[in-house]
Length: 110
Length: 113
Image 1 (cartoon, rainbow over the protein chains, first blue to last red):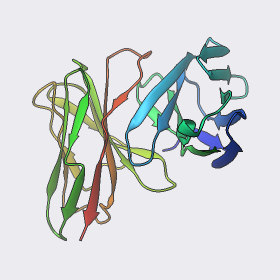
Image 2 (image 1 turned 135 degrees about the vertical axis):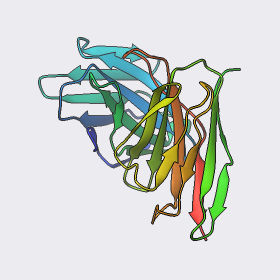
Image 3 (image 1 turned 180 degrees about the horizontal axis):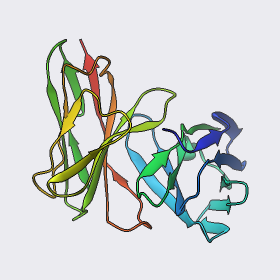
C-alpha cells in the first residue's frame, strides 16, 4: 500500500533554479523521510523530519512538514545538474515500517 | 567502510526457475527489508525482518521467500510461483528505533528470459 504521494511526478528546471517537490500522506506518522535515487542505483537517505517538527534544513535542502494537512515539501535551492535524480518521500508510523511514495523525477539542465 | 552489498547486480532467470538474491550488511543493523521497484510504481515491500530468525510478509510477498539465519544476511528467493518477477530489487537495513533512516544496497535487476 502506498502512503505518500509525490507531486509533481516529473519536474524539469535550469541549473541555479530552485526545485520544490511535495508529498501528501494519509495516516498519522512518527516521522517523514526524503530519499534520493540516481538512475539504476539504490536510494540514499537525505533528511528526516519528526512529526513534532515543522521545518528542517540540511545544506541546500529544506524540508517542511504540515501534519494538519498531512503534507511535506522538499526544496532544493540553487540546483545543479548533479541533483538530477528521483526523489521519494517515505512515512513511518507506529508500526515501524517505511512506506514510500512513487517519487518525483527531477531533471536539472545545465 | 560499513554498508550493504547486493549481488549479483544483474540476474537472468528462465521460466520455472527459482533464483536467490543476496543481501549482506556490516552495519550491525537489526532490521532488514526487501523492496521491489517497477517503473512508475515506487517501492513495494516484499518481506522484512526485525530480528534474527524472524521475518514478516510485506505487501507483495506472494511468490517470494526469505530467511534470516544471521544478522548480517537476508537473502531473497524469487520462486517460480512469482508470475511477473522482472523488476529492480532493493535491500535495505536500519537500526531499531523509529528515528532511523534506511541504508540501501545498490540493487539487483532481475530479468526473466
